[in-house]
Amino acid sequence: MRQLFLFTVFSLFIALQSIDAQINESEKSSVEISPHVNSIKKLPYRIFLPKNDTDSETGTMNSPRRMLVFLHGSGERGADNTAQLKHGKAFFERMAQDHNTAVLVPQCPENLSWHNGYSQTTAWGRDYHYPKKAAPNKVLDVLERLIDSVAEVQKIDASQISVGGLSMGGMGTLELLRRRPEFYKRAFVICGGAHGAVARQIGRTPVWFFHGEEDKIVSPKYAKRLYRKLKRKGIQTKLTLYPGVNHNSWDLAFEDQQLIPWLVQ
Image (cartoon, rainbow, N blue to C red; front, side, top):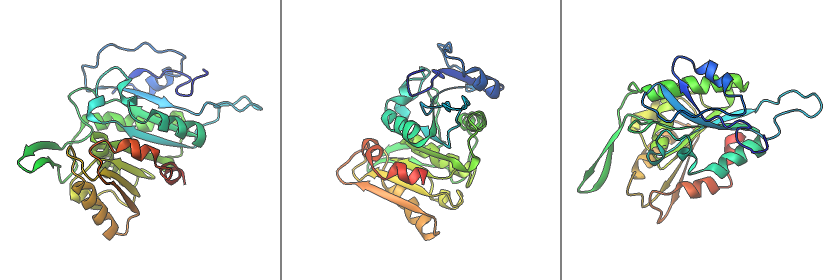
């Protein structure tokens, strides 16, 4: 009860057929963790909530004002419901404690992905191939149901849900945007990318891109292209490039003093 995130551990797995019931069940102080994720129908997650979640005068629960959904990178996939907190935990805690935000951090199962693109190594480096149109993705199907259910349980205003992610999660962020155009209030993409057509598929959700100029894993050309296209469409967008930085641009992005104010304004 004294720790910031969870006041419950929320270390459970969300079944496709019973998300709502399991979220309600997760409000217990402890939840048994299943040792395996061998089905696409299950998705581990953590949620950070404001510490002062009870009104001292009325004794009633204070609901967070807004929600942030964060998608991790490919290296944090699995079933331990812990690895997805490898990057950004202090950022999530600040969002929850200082800005009355529920921060939902799901974990993608091993060998699955938040997006439908693929990469190949060429003589010029690593090249990504992203689908021009949204393609079926069962992980995102489950994730969207989880987002809706958590928002309902926490009484989040539907107009106050933002999303962000790094690397594979940045790509997944752009997928979520085009699956439900203008559903998300704001989005930030760290070292991610997508097909250029995404710029005309996401509606007018403001997007902030962060990328290392020397990224050899995901070229900054994808973020630059999307930024230019969104800019031409008159959509609010930002691009922050880090000279001399390779793939790990997330530490700098999380430390950007303008990111949280931009998300909560």
